[in-house]
Image: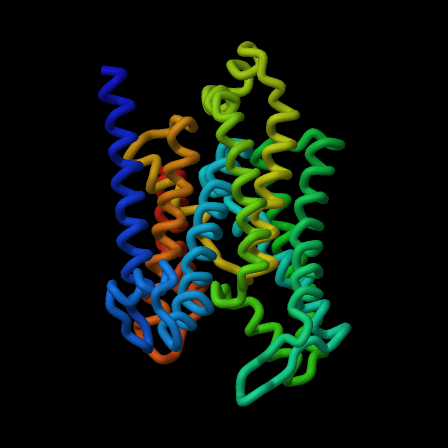
Length: 341
């Protein structure tokens, strides 16, 4: 029985991995400039030159790798936050991390004028400075919530409410900044809030990859502690788990993981909320499997969403954050209804 239990989860993980590979190959082929599988493979192995090589290595492959890393990161961060806060509605988007990043980026744009307009398109002349401000903005809310939890002993439910309060505060601050912005600054702020995987180049991808791998490895290492927390506070303590330390470090790393992704790519909402719940439906809540399979499911979801965003009204490319919000909103309402019942 136990072997069947394990086998079922491994097969589901392999199935998701196969879907990820097929989706990546399909995404490399489709777009405004259609390519065949043979052209894609030739370019990857260095046997292709010219336009095909440029499209694969400079445009599509970085975008696909970014989708895989960001989807995995946000899904795992959401799964861990839901365990730590013991709330199914917990996610990077719902506790204010994304809104803090939005506030930081808006502040950088209006203070230093980093936005420009070229050929009718918004262009950031100093994206790294905007990213730095967005990163610190995302961490402000996290530090406030964790400090309150440490000093005042907030319950997990109260930490969610504190996150909602910080989201409201950051949104109000962003609206105040936008009120005093000129047309170009306002356009730059709105453009930044759209989650866009095309912003990351190879340098940004390496940073995202290092943060994602180190964080996910840590979460997998702590999988038994998270399983103990799922059984309840007293049970976890009786098993020797330092629940306060596990919650504090886990929350900090999950927030850091999310903040880096949001800072580089903009706001991609609800991936961290819906992916862990869908995975739980298929394999249950065992964190030995929930963490790696949530990473796979998040990668698949974001990659398919981005491919759809690139092709639905080609040659125009929709920001992937719009599609994930359309997917996430019904799921959020479903969870609210189920909790009420």
